[in-house]
Structures are given as structure tokens and as C-alpha cells.
Length: 426
Ligand code: GLU
Image 1 (tube, rainbow, N blue to C red):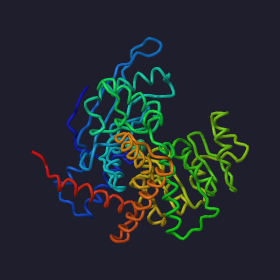
Image 2: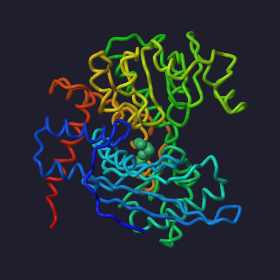
Image 3: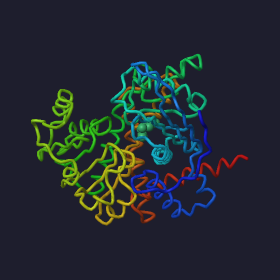
Image 4: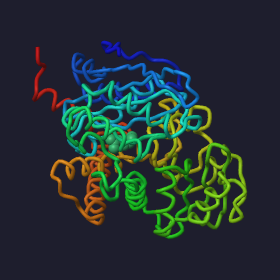
């Protein structure tokens, strides 16, 4: 295991999420007039851990996987953020995602710092037994760096409740007692919270409703295009369809389906389960993924991965509201194009914060050993999301900036204030 001193963050090309994260940070910091030294502190992750984990595969071969855990800030509380698995995970991506967790928790006033983890592996090519071994060894390597008061992981792209259960168990075995609060997004029977699985999608719906109200767009027949049909997009689609939104298109990695009258989301979910794809759905027509992104719609919700809306395609969008269910779906270079078009953006660090908000509730419930009913979880999350939306929009008006810059400014202001109060320990 290697613990590296954090190198200064360096800019790269448009498709490096760290470039977008840094550019937005720089803009907000400059507008707030944060002094140079403090900017350096806030711009640099406080800890980066790289682990190379040997795992014996089912066929007997020994393979080594690389994993990361980046803790961007612990100024406002224990570090918090998901772990993603994927063949394309990079350290810069994890750095960007870790900083977004810091800002996300600050925007919502959830008392955590920010972190993110990742393992370079392709879950589609791994058996459950191999995934379990990778997860357990990664957790064991990180044992000194995570913990209920230190850094609390959670699910992200390609990780789920089962993986969180393995993390909880491995950590607990090493500490010789069960510690449920070391990780969130666990199964309900192992200290998970009711409402956590739906939380990110539900939060997206809540802020979309606020945005519609703000723009004076009537709720009935509101058209929505969702890119991604996984934990965030799929859940948002189900909840939004149930509450009367018209989901006209779902976009996945292999294509899109479209129905101008609205897709039957439950039937589409069944179709995907049976066939492995959303394509060929009898209740809609297949469409090219790019074409679907450019459909005329009230709401576009990118809810998959980074770098979907870029300088190359932003001018073609025809949505009124862009609700960012994913982390970093819009590059920094696309921002001015969207601003010129007058798109109302609900930025990722606000839009998808329902997940970490309910993670916070899970952590609180674990530590209290007292569990809430689902209505209470949903109501409290909704209250936080609405308050955060109003805070960001008010900040945007007060400072004459767009919502994204306002969200960053609000977050930076809160984190900078915490650092000033704590002082720098030498
Ligand atoms: N991975 C989710 C996110 O990006 C949730 C993080 C958490 O709950 O800690 O917000």
C-alpha cells in the first residue's frame, strides 16, 4: 500500500472531470475573494490512498487490482462518499468526485467532508466471489483510513448494498465488533436506512419540482428525458412517472427509447429485465442516443456518468431545465453555452444530494441504534433538498451568478468558514 502526498491538482483536457471541478472551484473562489493560501488548501485533497490488491480469480490466476480512496476534506466532519468500480476509473476522476462530495455535503449542510473511492476492474467480467474478494481486500487495506468517525464509504457506480455489506463485515471483523456506521447504503437488515435506495432519484424529483415551480411551468404533462436507467435514473423515472411526469425518453449506453405520449416505466423495467436492454420495447420506438439527448423537453436529467454534455453538443440541447442526477455530467466548457441558451441548471452538487443526505440519516440511525420509518426519512430529506434549492437560488440572485456558480460559492463559503474557525494545526 502506498500513501502519497497529494500532488497539486493539474488541468488536463475537457474530458478530465478534474478540469471541470477545478475550473468551477477557481471561479467560485475568485468571486468569493478567498485568499490564496486558503484556496490552495481547498483545492488540494487532504489525503490520497492508493492500494494494489492481489486477488485469486476463480480460475486460479492471481490478479492485482488498483484501488483509490481520496479524502478531499474533513473540515466539516468525517469524510463521506461512494466507491465506484469500473475499468475506466482514474485517480483524477476520483479526486474530482471527492471534491464534489465536499461541496455537496456543504450545500445541503450535511455535517460531513468529502471523499470518493474507486477500483479499476470490470464488474461485468467478475464473478460474485471475485467481487467479494476484491471488496474485502480493498476494505482491509483501507482499514486505518476509514471508520464511522473517519471516512464513511457508500455505493456509487457499479457498487450496491451487497458490496456495502461486505465492507461492513470486513471492517467489523478487523475491529472485533460490529460497526454498522462505517458504511452507508447497506441492506436494511444490516443497519441500512429505509428510503436510501430511492433517495438520489427522489431528491432529483424534489428539486425538479422546485425548478418547475420557480420557472412557472405547469406540472401536468411535464416532459422528461432521462439518460441512465440505473440506481439514479431508473429510480427517478419510476418515482416521477408515478407522480404524473411524462417520461418521453430513456437513454442507455446501447441506445434510447422514445414515446412522445410518455413511456410506461414499469413495463420498460420489466422489458429490460427480460431482454437485457431497453431497446425493442413495444411501448416506444428505438432512437439514437445522441438524438434523444437533443429532444425537445421540459426536463433533461443526465443520470449516468461524467462528460455527457460537452462543448461539442451543448448548443443542441432543447431542454428548459437540466437536472444533473449524475456527478459531473456537464463539462466546464459546456457551461457558458448552456448559460447563453438560458437553460435553468440544477447542478449536480445540489440535484443528486438526496443520496448523501439519506446516507447521513443512515449514519445517524446506526449510531443511535434507533431506526426511522420511511415517511420520516423521505420528509426530512425533502425538507433538506427544498431548503438547499432555495439557498442556492437565493445565492444566485444575490450574487448575480448562475445556479452552478452559486452552489459552489455557497459550499466554498461554508467549508472556508469551518477551516477558519478550526485554524490550521501546525
Ligand atoms: N455516491 C453517492 C454520491 O455521489 C452517495 C454518496 C454517499 O452517500 O456517501 O453522492
